[in-house]
Amino acid sequence: MKATIDREGRITLEKEVQTKLGVKPGDEVILENRGDELIIKSVIAEAGLCLEGNVLVHHGVNAKPSVESLATVRDARLDKLSDGLQQ
Image (cartoon, rainbow, N blue to C red; front, side, top):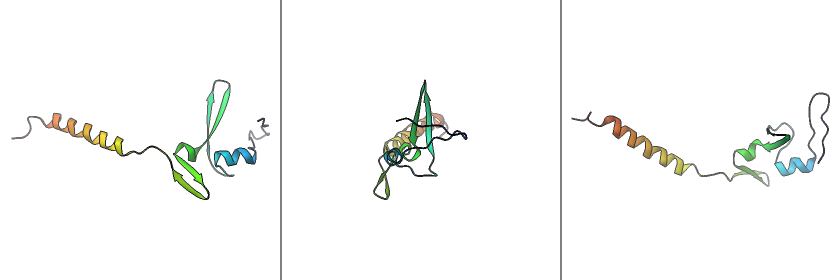
């Protein structure tokens, strides 16, 4: 797909591309520069949200295992730091 940059530096996305990205006028997008390429990503997609009909549905990773791992590491660190302090 080709696009033209206007005098203000704006690029207009065709309706088909907007629909595919799940964006509408006024939404923020993420622009990534990879060498000589410009990648446009939906902020909503980066958050793990997908538009299904008129509803945003979370399809990201479950944070619970990360929270449990963090708690385990934190508890081990506290045990090490408090070693010898208990009487």
